[in-house]
Length: 522
Image (cartoon, rainbow, N blue to C red; front, side, top):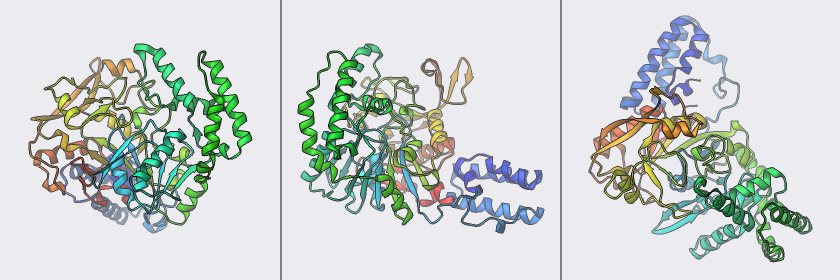
């Protein structure tokens, strides 16, 4: 319970304490909570764990004074609901995109995965893109987890992913050409659905039909493949191992699409010949990943999930309909990997020090991208071009209301703040602090896109910095104005910022340590 207070910076713990030990305790706890909020913003306490200990000591004093509940009445290995906690560090850690994608998740995953036994993808498909630079070599991943660069890690593609097998095999071949061995380390869920070429063709045709109302899809066939899944006529990777079954379902699926999309012509025989030729190779990697993941968890393996896309592209929580076709928020880990909520531990939200978006849809803090503007600076210095599409990304200031919404949905235990170095050279930096619509402040992210398009953003302006930070290794080495920016963002979000990206290279990251991860407070 007390870890929740430290994590969210709210008086939830205080209210719970009041219900347990009385009004006097509530007042004392509220006072400590206010003190803790101030400490987080100013870094008076060196770690989140230190803040937690401070609160716990206060609670112990209240128990002694008031004769309330004794700590011995609850096991140290059990949380308030009676569910065993993950204090021993065993659990599934998750890296998620907290904005509209392209935040730099792959870089953190690559760094973290060196210490993990299993790395997994759980949703989306080849519409995702992560670029990693290791030892001067650039790797672009679309379906494979970035953790494949750790030679000791098992890489799992969960049941929630939709897989275009030709693209997947091309990625494997590209790895081989660069000297990366993957034999025996890749596991594809037999329940994962297949993206076929005609899904991609349909994706393009549907986008073209929308004209100026287009979604901005990557045209990788992700939506049509998920549509086949929901219509229950889709084909799963495991079906490829029963050829007669696969062939029958494939012919039926092709017939369905040719009827549904007049003018679509599928060379069924050519496609069947191709899939028969790769069936054995794919079969060597096809397994029951649900069984494997849960077995790995049971034996204490460290598991890392690499999220694709981002929360604001979530089919349920994003700026619908300008979204992807899956749930790239925390829920997809459960449904796309086949694990229970109690197995999750750290949830790491990745967010740029500013904001970008590819494709269509409202973007409240968007800036003009004309040369000489701040928007142009962000796009040019930040090399803001999509890994998957090559499209230029729209750029804007960091959006705090959007980020608070993302924190609410996902329950981040820590933030990975990337590309702080891109802000270097700006005379002033801004954060979008609040949304106002018709003169009133909005309390949450509006579902109505017209409201989101018409609202006004209230900005907070801070002085910028000119010092080069690409070689900085600790937080204290950052320019004071850069430190203040990070601390202000942390204060506004109420979530500790553990990692800070200060350059484009693999190791250009400041790690403030485990004390800045609320997952360690449990």
